[in-house]
Length: 603
Image (cartoon, rainbow, N blue to C red; front, side, top):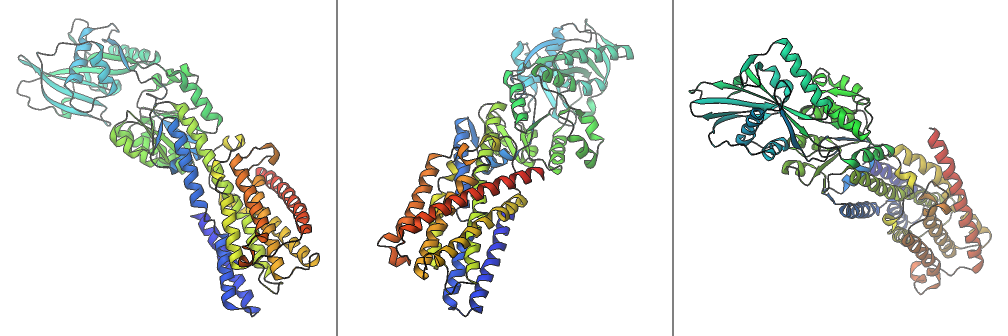
């Protein structure tokens, strides 16, 4: 939108200026109007939608080869601009092959009664089963034929637990499974190895907490298991039943770290993308995984601490924290909003129902093939392989796409603008129009043909090193730095055509048409790279189309179409002069470009 407004202001300025000058000089009104309209067309970067569409489509095809489905092509460019990626731990840093390793009671000993209770809860749970439920059910089959389900209090992210009311013979029991901190907080007793309920005093509480910490330090994901017996006439399970519980023990799970995850995080960091881990797991487990992967921990913020921060305080903290633990879905959303408020382009990788709001909020929502439907619908990209290295390749593809779009924009706002400005300014001192409207449109058409292969161009490594954003100040400064060089050589061409060749209207227009086409098209090889043009290899098709267009422009005055286009054959001496002018122009643009980037870097 901002780029469109910039072009519109420039177009209106030049068109009105040209019309007023021609009216003031009492030139034919219709001819002047058509000339002004042709100028407006020449200034309009009408090829931009094609360049954007083709570069994004080409990027989507490359991503498809990496097993990534791109639902919204513009997300590829957003991915290239991304400088923060928020991701869960499971499946990204770990293999997502969760298995139940231990089922221990309050003393730390493996106890089959803890497994039986966990199995009961997972077996009768009717809501969406988590990978932890699958791991419990897959660990060992427990005979539950004597039990029947009465009711259930489903899992939610505020309580962080699920309760199932079951019955066997003349007994009813509520079995609770959930986050250890929340389950322990509701317990008044604990179960000893014989199955008896013992009062949970401070010493026992300290031993259980130490056991929980020890499991976390060893990298185990832990669920707390508790129960209570209820009266036979108790008809339903309600949240208030989750009180005065008997703590049975812990179910401890292992999810091995993914070998490629640490390498991928370091690769992303080297390209200017900070990876922030946003997880519902506790701090100890997440720290253990990060240590195994060699991921440095810059700062930790838990969901409990986050709940005490207002939005301003959170914005101040998110920059220095890369580990967010025990956070719920609403808090994930707050983290993303805080990062965006700091000016970051944020990607979010998630696969659960609770991730849908965050996938919508992020600049780039990314999900995986095995995700729930609502997460896949909310995402802009879907990974068929749950691997951060694929995202790293996607980031580079996004930057490659953005780089080629920027090449066209920088061309349109520098060389193209310079030529159109020269044309408008020439009306002040020439007794005739410097170029006919038809010639301006032909110039514009041939220029567009030369740029058709630009989306296929190679991109330098330094352009892939850091996130790149739309920067109208940069585009405007580049235009004002390089555009005048084009105008300077145009005015020099005017002078030489009139002085050396004593060119009349037809020859003047023909000579300038050929010169403007050569400079306008060939300058792409200078503008397309920050390097010395001889050290940056363009795509062969770009070379071919550019040279073909220049030779076509040089040949047109000698064809049968020349009289219809208002052209006349040019003397051979002109082409010798053209070589000198074009070479000098390209050298001057290269000097101007190097000066611009030096000062841009300092700024």
